[in-house]
Amino acid sequence: MVKMSSEHQVMDSSLSSLGRLSQQDGGLCGAGLEKKLQVGLEKHLNGCVPLSHQVAGHKFGVDKVGILQHPDGTVLKQLQPPPRGPREMHFYKKVYTADSGDPSLLNLQHYLPKYYGTWSSPDAPTDLYLKLEDVTRKFSKPCIMDVKIGQRSYDPFASQEKREQQIKKYPLMEEIGFLVLGMRVYQVNSDTYDTYDQHYGRGLVKETIREGVAKFFDNGESLRKDAVVASMQKVQKILQWFEGQSQLHFYASSLLFVYEGFPRHGAPQPPGDVPPGGTTMMMTMATAGGDAGDLKERVLECNNNMCQVGLRENGHLAAALGQSLSNMYALHSRGCPLEHHVEDPQWKCPARAALEQSNGNGAKTQQDTADGTRGSVDVEVRMIDFAHVFPSNTRDEGYIYGLKNLLSVLQQIVDHS
Image (cartoon, rainbow, N blue to C red):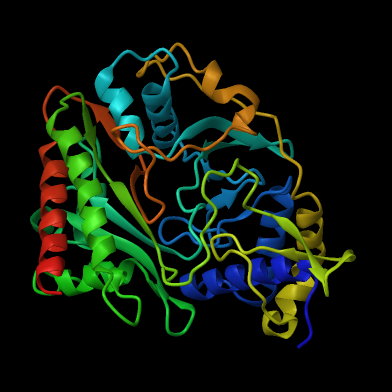
């Protein structure tokens, strides 16, 4: 078998991911697609690459920039236009402010991705990104599910047109209380992933919701009942937080579920407590025939982002984007220290310097549970997407309703397994 170079492995993986995204979302082909992707790649160099394991939301290479991965292992989420983007940024600042004395907000940190401030490329300084923990980075074969929670996916200030639009997308949202936005499930028997998009989730009704969610825990050989139970325990913790707070209401927010899809028996342990940058691109040296002088470089897979794909499978995309991707990966080890901040008087967050020093570069990502102990590497459940979070003086009954219904469905999966 002919082995490809490290650069070709990474380049082909990104091209393959971009090609799949364009096929899934449609509307682009041929030269138009090449030009759009090439412009996007050139604009977002400095070592940042598309996040290939994204299962929902705006994706790179279509009509939005999507989620990017920074060389240090964190993820970059582009700020949405006002007021959504600034609102989400200042939600993170409010929760992670260095001098916060609010026990409820301090507790909330355990259920969110860690926030490392904001980031922007020198090539596009006006494009601001949230710099966040990559919750999937410690997993070898991450199985990922994005579930929107709540009885309403529109906020109280949405226009009538927006409300009608959201209701039309999933009329059962009020009754079911949650919506599966996307899933990516590792299949042990074939060493591949099964993916399900938002159309799959919107097709689920009361009679099929249990079987629909159960697919996320089916690895092709068996139902991962252990992952279901562990997920329930983490959702219960989030429910407890919501039942004890009455200062925030969450709309169009999601839970991100991640569990390890690699079989436990005889499986190599995925990377655990590794500093950002230690897993995105790792070079190892292997000796051949016991000769320490015969060293070979290879790229370790991280979150299944890098895989061997033949150049011919990429066709004209490889020719069109080869130079841009080559430049991108030549810069992969470089970070961009430039950052910008936008103030929003709604949150009145005075302190943030400790979180935003050096863009969070080099900071060690911790994975702690609510009780302060080291969390399992097998399952994570985190809250994401906060563009529609508003102050309140009552409990968020819509979100609580969704969490309870989701827990009920997970319990049914366990009972029927």
